[in-house]
Length: 39
Image (cartoon, rainbow, N blue to C red; front, side, top):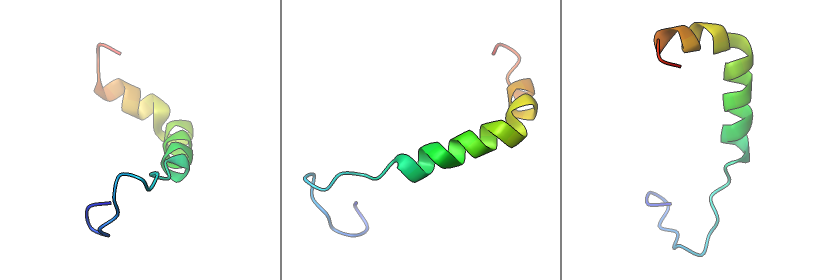
């Protein structure tokens, strides 16, 4: 938004980031959870 000069009235598309996070959790979830011992 800052780089493109959009105002606050333009919504941020967060769907691709949710999908990417889901894929990362699917493939790397066990390894990533091992990095944080309290989780």
